Amino acid sequence: MGLTAVGPAAADPGEPSSLEAALLPVVTGQMAKMGIPGLIVSVQTPDRGSWQAALGVSDIATGAPMDVADHVRIGSITKSLTATVILQLAQEGRLRLDDPLAPYFPGVQTNQATIRQALQLTSGIADYTTAAFLNALADAPKSVWSPSELVGLIADEPPMFAAGNGWYYSNTNYVMLGIVAEQVTGQPLGRLIAERIFTPLAMTGCSFPDAADAAIPDPSSRGYMLSTTWDRPPTPPAPLPGLVDVTAFNPSWAAGAGQAICTVADLAVWGRALATGELLDPDMQAQRLTYYPTGDPHAKYGLGIVNINGLVGHNGEISGYMSQTARRESDGTVIVVLSNLMIAPDLTEPATAISELISRAIPPNP
Image (tube, rainbow, N blue to C red):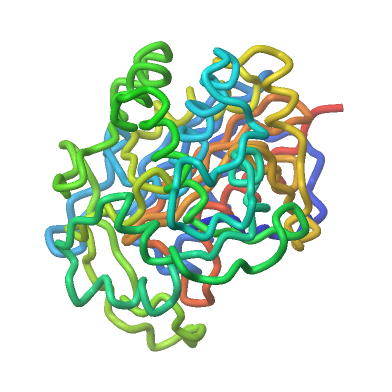
């Protein structure tokens, strides 16, 4: 549901006459290469101004254009929201990051892992989002899942490795963390995220819908996949298969790992707040930014945050959509990319690849 880095490459250090002149050809060229129907981009720099654009179409059936106000599902960027709630609860003394998960999940194989290890994806707990699970979503796209049902799918599964001795992008970790937050507070995760993040940061276009609610607020973009088979092989450049509209797939299968909805403006706010620790005290933010290697030399993972080639934030994919929000650590540039195509024909993640190309095209000023 996220996290695939692109290796760095040389960039022209010459300062562009405008962000649009520097970035529009890069972005539209990559859109064409990947076959992306629609894209929304926001770039905010400390010294070259800002650029925001909606490109392509939000609905291939009607030809309706993308709109910068469009709402989209943000997939695993939700992990950064769930993590923030957990870190705030730790600040408040309502839990400890090194508490074991086991007391919260009787009867579930938790691998003697801690809350911190779940946040960092080093718990070794099995992932319920197997290829078989994800491929089966198309058979029952309106299915409503509860977080406890999702955790139950792996209750008896053996661990992947000893807790703390490896890293794996298991979505089970963040479904569990959402349940932990609910048990500690007695409040639903969506309300906690709204009250603790969306409201104080005035992220008015964001929501964490109830499990039974598969709607996206207006205005919104449709979401597409080249196939509902998640483990498909790469597709040749031509001819491409037709796009499949998966907008109505219920996102409850992602829960605290990927259920949220946002706009590009709100994710620009969140990208900056996430990377700078606006909602945490300095010690807790320092813990958040303590990274573990992912096996990809270009990416390392903290506590609900990822650093990909110096872009610090989070990315995410979910049925029909792929998004990334990040702040460049070298100069504070915030880059947000929202795609209404989940995965490109070559299996590249569109928003992550385009965010990297944007960062290369406008390198930090010396």
